[in-house]
Amino acid sequence: MIDEPKQDQMTPFLFLLICLACWRLTHLLSKEDGPFDLVYLLRKKAGAGFFGSLLDCFYCVSIWIAFPLVLALGYFWWEKLLYWLSVSGAACILEQATTTKPKLPQDQLPDYKED
Image (tube, rainbow, N blue to C red; front, side, top):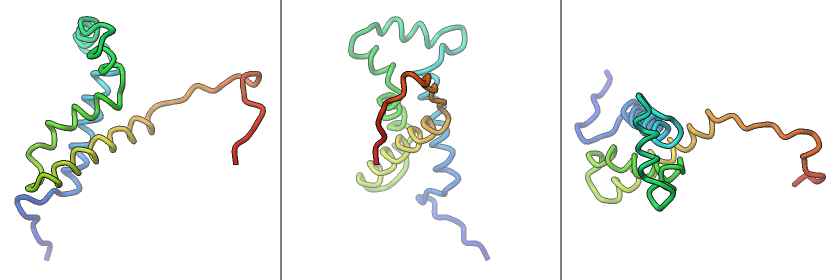
């Protein structure tokens, strides 16, 4: 017989959903123009200052998007902190996995290799 999870216990499925939601919202705010160019206008109004540079950095935005998503999770403060960082980290891993890196032309490759 399968035991039902406790009310305050996070399931792997819930964690996956929260990570995907964090990645999607972070990607929307930092990399896309959004519907009707609303996100583009938001980034334009933020300018080149502090808030504008925060919206350009995927990793920075993921920290702030993950925070409200995990507030209801965990009972103790250290659980909330771990959920916050792990959801943001999972969003960063998803971003690395889905981003294609441009290949350098042969003449721009370094002449050395690291061990």
